[in-house]
Image: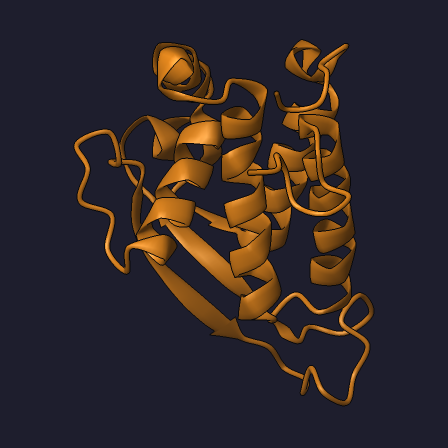
Length: 159
């Protein structure tokens, strides 16, 4: 079986996909489909960096190393499995949509208050990031983590 997905063959390629999804989310901050895709993409960068069962400990250590990755993992797995029940998922207590003063289908989202997708946090995540965080802000921070990550330097295609 081939590795990767069409032109997505490396963790850097997945980072490029994450950047494109972030741009889409900035343009449409209430688009739950884009937010879903973004967090799934971000979660799987670690899988592409350290593929296979042999690297499971490396992936777990990487995710445990930063609260942003823990929150992202919770969201991605909670979305994927409908409800996150694995013991490591303890950073998110819920989600909500705050209504804005203006209709997002009519008004420009970066000039008018059109509302936000919000993640409510628990535990260490709440201590480090606050009790809630806007999805676009969380996505920006996770993207910055991966953009600045030494993990993504000099990795070769999945083999």
